Length: 492
Figure 1: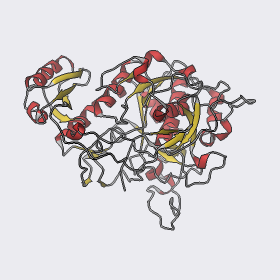
Figure 2: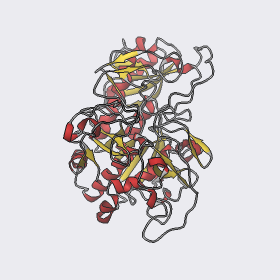
Figure 3: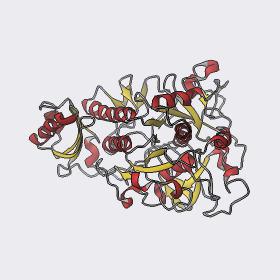
Figure 4: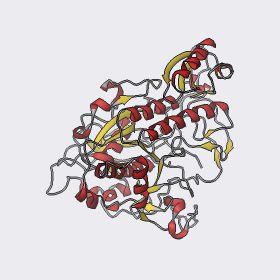
């Protein structure tokens, strides 16, 4: 059983292949035999030190051992550095102003890797690119079983959201020309972090390059597709969106990208972020390894900084059907080239950012409100659940085998499934709560998200593969907490 936060099968939308991030996993795509590693290409490192002015000493130490400073974040005491010396991390750890240091991408980054596919959704198709509006509904709203499941219509009768509330979509980027997305997209708050973790506000940097990078636009549509007589409607159709690109053209989300995205959200008045991915190249980042520990600490600091700036951080739980509360065997890390390890991971190993303190972790259910066959779970590991789709469940609508319909680049709409699709539903609810209760802080909003949800009890004889052999145990009984969250909940 593989543990993937961002791997997915290729999707087909309007005839183009899609590499999707927290969609249902199907394994890492194979690459040609890698070329020998060279020392010419610099490796990337995260160096952790003191916050504020004290980080200048850390920068000096980076340079003293032959490294180059790429980006400094004094807010959290983190320096992103490069060096051609494989021993850089070990050398800089002994320097003044350095608390931790580690390679953020694994030294095998110098090999030509396979394209990562860490956004978890399944294949889908579009039915058309343009539609005529119908009375009282968006043209494709009948296909949105997911919105009926969370009672979005009842919520929207009270509020459709406020333009003063901004949702940051940390992903591949949002198509700025899509008719369902452009009305709500705030260009001034959009950025790319996918170039060594350095913010780049040029539109050509943060928008998706083509239809293969559809994941962010799909996520954005579920959150806030405008109610404008075109296509679909999102959970919060009147809130603002910010495109925060944290995925490079290879499909990777390295620590420095995620760090940049969280800090950008914290400092640009973003109220909630959607994070339907996990940080590469380790499926689990383990404190027993000093490289992994340093990068994990840097990401943790970035999430904590965002939380401290009143940002609600929502993450997708992942699509490996893992019990996150128990030890997991990881045979797929690192995923960016070079040999993988076969390791048993324990309590010192975590998915980033989904298992960090202070985040909302969302599992997925299908159209019958039972845990999707692929969704990660675990007692104490899930905050709430939401519709992510399940091709193995029979839907109550014409939708593509129970998948979730949303927007894709090029003005179309397509079906995907995965915890990537579940997280945005929770984000939309958070955006509505923050619109209706601007006086609530992030912690109060997160509490309301859980407390106002409907409890889901554990299913009996859970057998998602239909082979007559139940393959997962839902802890919590009537509370269903192992599958659906601390109080086992369905959003409403």
